[in-house]
Image 1 (cartoon, rainbow, N blue to C red):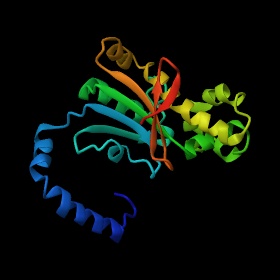
Image 2 (tube, rainbow, N blue to C red):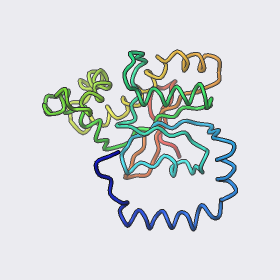
Image 3 (cartoon, rainbow, N blue to C red):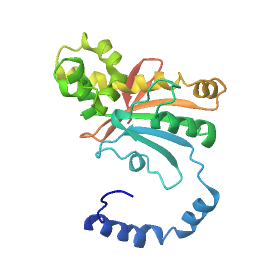
Length: 219
């Protein structure tokens, strides 16, 4: 048993009670159907843990619509079957092979703390993140090659971080294709991969356009 687990904060208790009264009671039949029939989401969303990003709300999703993976900087690591713990890779495997989602959408965002940490690591400003004991530092190693790709063309820090936020999305898309079951599903036309970046302050979504190799703002 855990040594100590306190009761929920009162504000969360009140929000739960409001959800139960206002949402659950109105859609009780739908929740019963989900519980009995299981989930059949059409898309998997990979988004950042950042509390300012709400992919479910962004796409107007209802329970059962989206299979959501949230992690630091919305990164997907490359396929690495080394018997270690790989929560993000496990989620991708389940989405593709068990749920058979039709779309995987990677959503990055502005002012990403994880991407900022990667910049600091690569530029020698965060020795504490380079320590072996830093989980954030080791996770952001996934994006280190991306920093090398964008650094020279973006001498200003703000521009460099913004470019690396876009590059993080592309890194995840490239890494998704290193998973054999993802590549097979894409080749068979069973799954499509998508990239997007959210400008939090402007409330604008930018979607990656493969032919132009750029992110275009949705109207």
